[in-house]
Length: 68
Image (cartoon, rainbow, N blue to C red; front, side, top):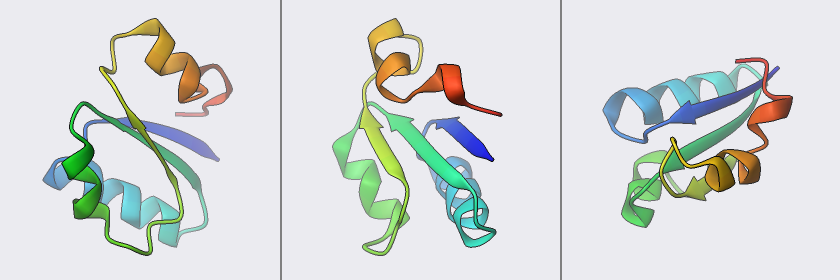
């Protein structure tokens, strides 16, 4: 399953890591590049810098292919 998560705070980063651990393909969108540190060095998913309401950002995150 491909999941796009808007926001990489405590909840978003925890959800992303849990879904990756379960074998899902995950993309996290956040405005702050520093938020990537919450995911750790071993985060296997994609990280897109931008606003989750911006169409170009959503296209880059492949939201059209997302299951959730």
